[in-house]
Image 1 (cartoon, helix red, strand yellow):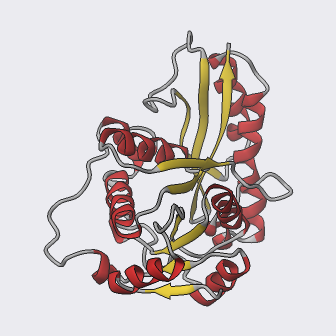
Image 2 (cartoon, one colour):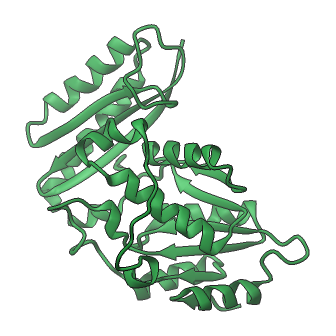
Length: 282
């Protein structure tokens, strides 16, 4: 079956019927994206197919999660190429609404990310996670998936979506997909296409820092090793390097045991990049 493209709620409802989602136990998985799809997104679609009978992909550059001066206007939009990728990966429906379709002009109600949305990434992008959770909840309500798949590269986002599902009793299973990297270690991102050849070489300091930290065993050693790599590359403008408790995204204490997330956000040239690795302490 060819991929069905829906750009409004009525078309999405018809697409769900055409797929048979929800009928006779058939399950549907959603992969929310902002388009500019790459191999990392393909891996999400493949994982989604393992968890459900049908796969839906949303393509929507969400204005609510961009702050003043961020790259909403220039965010890459490659819709025709994205459709080819979705078709090749066996996606049943692509939901590609406009901002006008998603949001009322006098929109008033949204989702608050709470305290976890104000630390780490949230401290540098105020309101970002409120916008993320608002659009994700709307997509859940419209697509009505049984499963939703998100990449672990956006670790704080994934943690907040899991918390929203738990706090609001949403009947959806959340699956986290491993970060996909280029052969040289750079985490795949739609924003990588902004990087010049020189900037791309500099950007490798992010993954090198995380891998250096992952080789150490205590919080202090982990932070010190990762910071040393970043400090050695002056062209990297670091927003934060954090060893976070995955339950709160607050800094992990020196006595932290169990899972922790070593995360970094930095600017290379005009491009802001994020990356992380998951560690087990103790």
